[in-house]
Length: 93
Image (cartoon, rainbow, N blue to C red):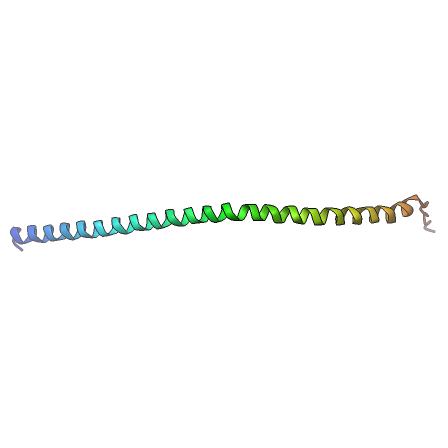
């Protein structure tokens, strides 16, 4: 292989490298922009969803708290009489 031919081959490889590098860089920029847009959309969805979730949680709390308080009071009434009765101790013979 002659030096001129070798230099031509090196130049072709460099040109191909530059072309591929530009394409890769362009694809990376496009992907980066797509990712930024997706993150922006997700943040907007979270901002919309958060108040709805807070409302649902408050609603559940308004419904569950009285029910749990009634259940607790009922359980206390059932346990109190049993606690007042003297316990019988069994003797082992």
